[in-house]
Length: 258
Image (cartoon, rainbow, N blue to C red; front, side):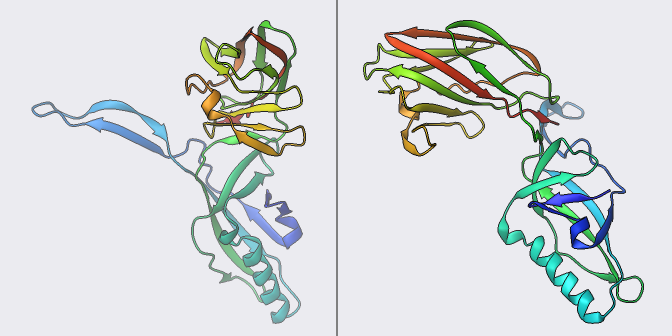
């Protein structure tokens, strides 16, 4: 078993790895209320907390002490937490990517001459694993369509990229209804060569040019800050216009696993 962190494979760093524990369900935040005179607690449900991924590593024997020290320095630089959260792909889950950084320091222990072993604890503030080759859906006509997510096992927070023409009046709008959750974009002064982007995970919206350069904030043009999710399997998408022209809607599913 190996892994790739920040684009560099563990094997290319000259280390062997293994996972003795697999945290398939991330830690939970449990919400409860204590009621006077009642045994136990009132359960208000839970939410996912961070994910922790633990990996044991072994540096293969080197010819000299200097070579072993150089290998340790290279590993420390590779895993430097100052880089922030980076892509982490496990060889046992090649279709998924986690976003992680080190949670603890790295301590090297001597095993045999000029080799070392060490344990890594990766901290994933976002507990989900995301599809490396994500699902993308394209809608080019008004009306109702069905988009079907085949990857992942939990609802996702998609990115919508809308193209069309919307005037500056509040009576000029395009609505995107996802599973009965309506997103209305009105008075956006959107031209044919601009793209209105809605990022539901970051709960933000903005307008870009065709090269992806951000031109202006899009939140003031959303009637209600209602950010829809995509369920696993079938999702109903309805496009409606009023005094506006719809060209296309691209949906980046951001499919993910719990």
